[in-house]
Image (cartoon, rainbow, N blue to C red):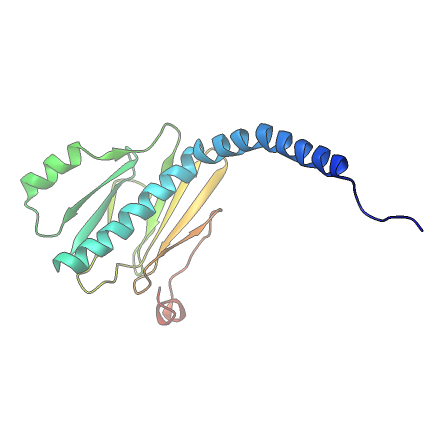
Length: 173
């Protein structure tokens, strides 16, 4: 009768080999994930949107996420901020890393905006203005869909040509 199974030495060698492979692979994967400027910029915008929505509900004030398509970046302010204060806040805008730009911004019932500035309003009741933002770098694109009644921004790792219509609005867009 033969014994079936693995010896302690065989198991130790396998664990050692797996450990060595992880030691080599994990830093590279971590660096690739953390150094991806397009993903980092997407996370930054989504984080700002989440923060603005929460702040709007907590403070019972409307807030605005302002996007600059010409000099890619964004800044935020409450809707009751004076024009002088908004100009000051704009000077401290968060700029995107080199090569990342906003391809376009689209609101329902409006034409696609490819230059200038655009804004997304976050209302005190917890919803936001429906908007689609396309971020691009080289041949890669991310689509951010700001859903008015959901607490999250939908993210697609490709350019999604989203069309607003009555069915979309009924679905919460």
